[in-house]
Length: 358
Image (cartoon, rainbow, N blue to C red; front, side, top):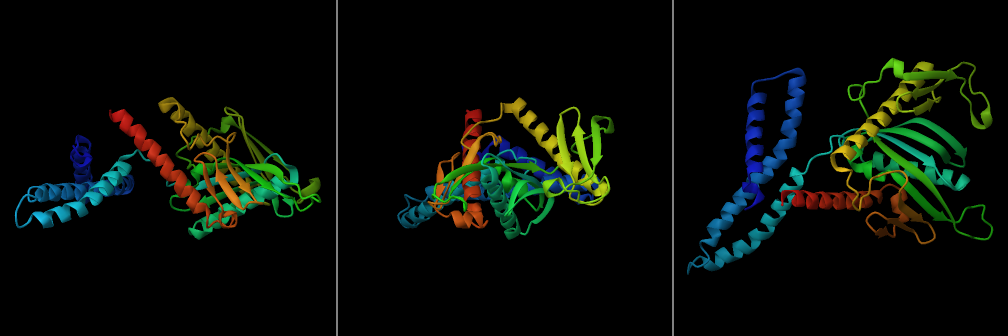
């Protein structure tokens, strides 16, 4: 039996009708927002299921005509053309029925840090950040730097930014992990290739309603902001360091001259780190967090290598190599990697769902 005629789809149709009826009653406030969101999630499933049911009904009608002396040839031709459409609709419906990641539509807190490799690692961290910045801008997303610790020559020891845009987390969530670079440093007289690394963390931005943080759980220290080499950049205690005592998470912020603004930015990052930690904990409890070809996104994993001498980028989770390093670092080629990772993840989840149904 086709998935279009399954009990699961009957339940989707019934719920969609209930939501439509509830929305026609003119709800307001929080109820309207909740119903609108559910309607938007159910509508594509209903449309695909209806199209598939119509195609299956048409196939049944055509199958009954193939032995007809006058209409048989035409029926066989139309059947041959209809089969690929049914197959495509079946796949699309299965994809639309997969559980959605509740964080996919959220904005992102992006953290890039230099790893092993000294100055070269810091330069690479700068390259990575600019890659994500260009990718975000190409999609019309807004990028705001929350904090940055520069190393000189365009490098960063650490940079944290907010990326705001529809589906930002869905697109960037596979970027978390260790990124490795292989290239000849400008200071290398012998032309030897050096290997260095940077870590990337992509966190879904949390709202205040997602994470309840008690004042008693925070230790807030204020201090004088410092610039390169430890020199003071202002004469007031405007820099803020917030420690979340239950988890031990520490966030420092000193980019703003206002202590109030620094505290607000630090709280935004802290809230998102706690939210992501809770998401991972829940995922572990539900399914021991599936370890497929995509991996866990843990920062200890080496996920990708950028090889400058050969102009290639290799994603080790899906064994994909692209000989377009310049395009990837320019942001435009990153989309191909993200699409491949997304497709692989969807295929793995479809296989998992099929096993669960057996």
